[in-house]
Image (cartoon, rainbow, N blue to C red; front, side, top):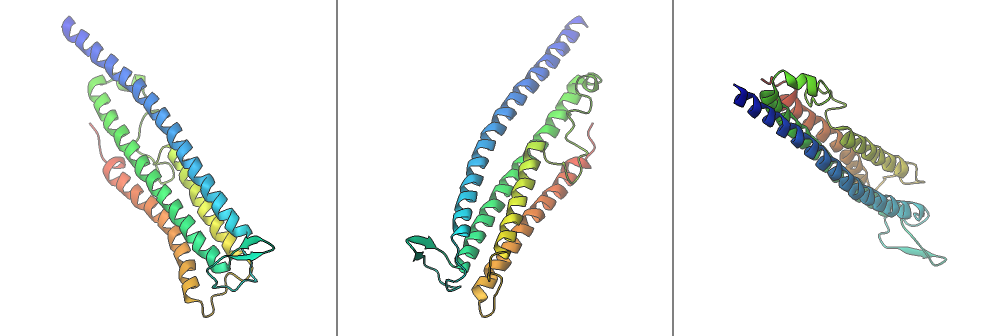
Length: 215
């Protein structure tokens, strides 16, 4: 009996050690991911900002090449539209990566919780309480805080880019400009896809984790 209790205590200690190790690894991963995403966002900000501030509505709308005015490069409205599509597509990709990694984090958290409950038994609630429960999250917080903050920030950036191009002089004028209209619609679709992917992953989370009863 005493040997059994000793084994149980050793198992519990290993579980707690693994928790601390996992926490440290997650923190390091978050820091590395934060730097990568920050660099990518700054590059997008700089690229789009340059094209936006150097777009001249007086240049022929569909002109695809750069025009120099007083030795400064300027772009047409259609070039700005094409740039916005590229920027929004990259932002959609970043959001897709965030959502996928955030869901993976919750899935692993759920599996760790099941294992800990199995070995810790009644001691689980005393140690973790409700602070380490990945289940029963809602639509707005089913991703970990780090990921959800970045997701809404990137979505906000997508919307800001769209508002910026809409406010550009003579840009939303698609008479006889089918290609430009296609680019504009693509911008809208790319923003919607971010929300659609977020919602789809929440449904996946709810099906696999939230509504799943654990022992």
